Image 1: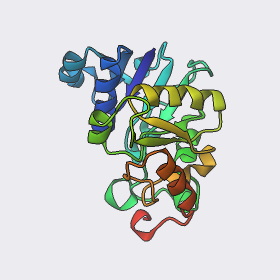
Image 2: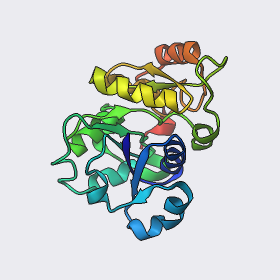
Image 3: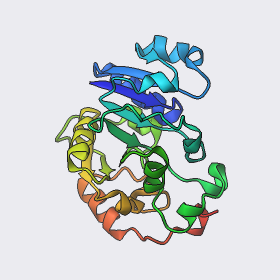
Image 4: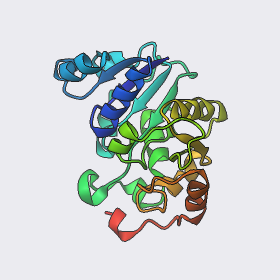
Amino acid sequence: MRIAIIGTGNIGGALTRRFTALGHEVTIANSRGPETLRNLATETGATAHTVDDVVRGADVIIVTIPQKSIPQLPAELFAHVPESTVVIDTGNYYPQQRDGRIAEIEDGMTESRWVANQLGRPVVKVFNNIYAKHLLEKGVARGTKGRIALPVAGDDDVAKAKVIHLVDELGFDGVDAGSIDESWRQQPGTPCYGADCDVEGLRKALQEASPQRAIAWRA
């Protein structure tokens, strides 16, 4: 599968390493240009591109950059990307720690609905509630007791199924977490955030989540 990754921080770097190891054709981009990605490309076999070029021909596009940087992506980035291409959002809103105040999110919009509106494309939310080190190191075979489960939220069942398959390849159980407007259940401060739950534990955590964003996660 051709996987494009925009953003090569902790999560983007972990996904680059894992997906190339699994044999996928991975292309990477960041805001500083492909020349800054030489070391990661050499280490993994991924190909570095500009942000404009990385989306071309991709089956899956993973956007894994700070929330505040989403509006800085090129306005027409997805203009020629087929609707069948799955776009994944791994992001979280950290208003006090990094992103500043985003009014729509503060007013109750889910983080990934806001991202989808900014991109002009539907997204699937996943990989946002697990530590990058665990994403890199804790994948295990299907059926292993205690296998970590990851919530997968989105409005398109076909897109979610593709993402759940990728999650399984990485060594985790994907759990359908509902629509993008329900993805508040996996945002920072909820019971499943950073919890490394198994399937049963994750489903319980999603049900116990509160739509009220805690003060620590508000601007």
